Amino acid sequence: MWGVLDCVCTSISSSSYYYEGERLARLLKSIHKEIESTKTLEGNSLPEKFWFKQQFAIGVNEVTRVLERMSPVSESGRSLQQSHVMCINHKVPSVHLQAILIASDCNPKWLAKHLPSLASSRKVPLIFVKDKRGGSLRLGELVKLKTAIAIGVKARGNAINEIVEGILCGNETNPDTDCQI
Image 1 (cartoon, rainbow, N blue to C red):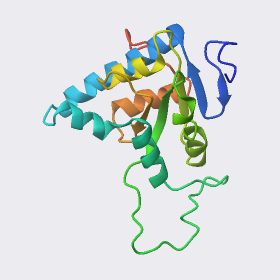
Image 2 (cartoon, rainbow, N blue to C red):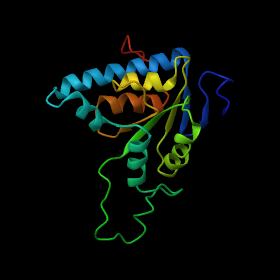
Image 3 (cartoon, one colour):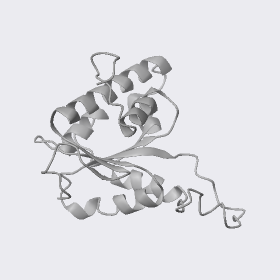
Image 4 (spheres, helix red, strand yellow):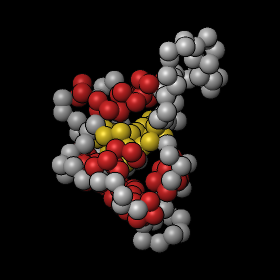
């Protein structure tokens, strides 16, 4: 499937990445560390379930909903809705996704088949997660659920977004230290 067996992390296109093995463990550990520190910094005034919903779009349906509410981006980088006259009743999306984590062990495959093309039209990068235990189990652990096929990271300008931006730029951090790998 898309050359995932050929190497540990393959960039399929400029906006798709595969993570498995030790690299996946480091990725998830650093994201988990930032989730915990962001929760601590923001205080725990909200129940955990609501706090996670503010930070992430959890599940295929919610990720799809947020992507569909985002306006498509043309090849020039401009939003296609900016070039057309907007309807008075049209709501500008208040939530944008910085990246989408997708479990590559999704079964049946058609559940998440539409996400890569939808994310590509919105210029949202994809991070495919593959693990022997199951990528959906590993993603579920991040948001304290049993499983999660897809998690969209909402762009909110916090420490979670900084770590994801570093990952997307190729600057993976070691969760045990603050230095670059």
